[in-house]
Image: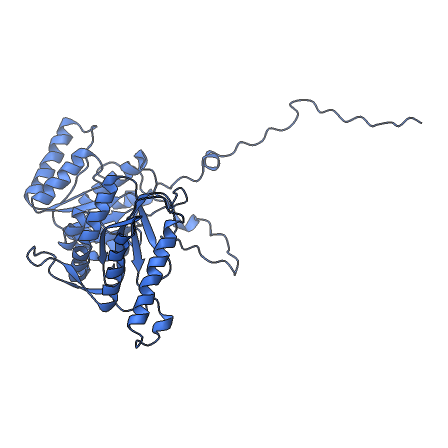
Length: 393
C-alpha cells in the first residue's frame, strides 16, 4: 500500500507583503519632547507658547490595577557592581529613629570664625561618639572623620583589608552595639526596650578616588555650618515645587525673588555671534557685573563660568539653569550653597525624564540657552510660583 504524502505548497519568493517599517520614534525609543522650540532672540510670549505641545491632546496614562503600588526609590541600595568585602572608603549616613532622642544640638555662628558652627552631643550622641572612636581599635577599620548631627550621623569609614563578610554586616553590628549600650545605660526611658537609636538601613557612598574622599571629608566637616545656615535662612532654602514659565513647569531652589531683580542678563556665550552681537552682549554683561545684577545661564562653557565667578566676586547674583532637574532632597554644593544662604543664588531645573542622570546633549543646551534669554528679556509677571515647601535637611 502506497502512502501518498501531500506536497507542501510552494511559495514564490517575494510574494509576502513587506512588513511595515516601524516609525523612527518607536525604533529609537521615545524621545524627550521639545518643551521650548529653538526660537530667535526677539520672540514674544504668545509666539513661544504657540510652539509648545498641546496638553489636552496627550493620551491618558494606562489604567493601573487596584493592587498596584507606586514605585518609590530610596537611597539605601548597595552598589551591585562593587564588592563590599574589599578595601575601600565609604561615607555612610545613619538616620535617627523617629522615637529616639536627638543625638546633638547645633551651636555657634556659621559666619563667625571665632565662634564656628559645631554640635553639642546629647547622652545618646555621647554613646554613638564613643562607639565610633572604638572602631579605630579594630585593625581592619579606620575612621577618618565623622559628625553627629541632631537627626543623623555621617562617618567616613575606611576598610583597610579584605573582610570575611560584606561591609554592611559590620555597619549593622555597630548600630546594634550603640542601641544595646543606650538601652543598658538608660533603662528608665519609657519603651526603651522597643526603641532603636537608628532607623532601618543606611546610605553609603563609595570614594573611588582620593579626590572623592577629600570632598567627602570636607562635606562632613562643613555639615554643622551648612545646617545652621539653612535654619537661620529658611526662606532662602525653600524648594518651590513648581514655577510656571511659558506653560512649562520647572523646579526651583533658592531665592525666587532674584527673578524680580531689575537688572538681569543672559550669560550665553556662542562662537556664532557676529562682532556686533558679541560687543552688544559684552556691554550688557559688564554693566550687569558693575551694577551687582543677576546673570542667568546654565554656566556650562568655560567663558560662562568665568562670567559667573566675576559677578559673584563683585557682589552680584546668579540664576543657574540645571539640565538634570532638582530632586526632592537637592542641595547646591560648594560656594553656591553659601550664596543661597546670602540670597544670591537661584537654581531652576528642567523636569526630569528618568531616575538616571541624563546625557547632556546639544539640543538641551540650546533649550537652556533660549530659556535663559527669555528669563532675561521678560518681566517677572510672566513667571508664576505654583507652590513652595520648606527644606528640612
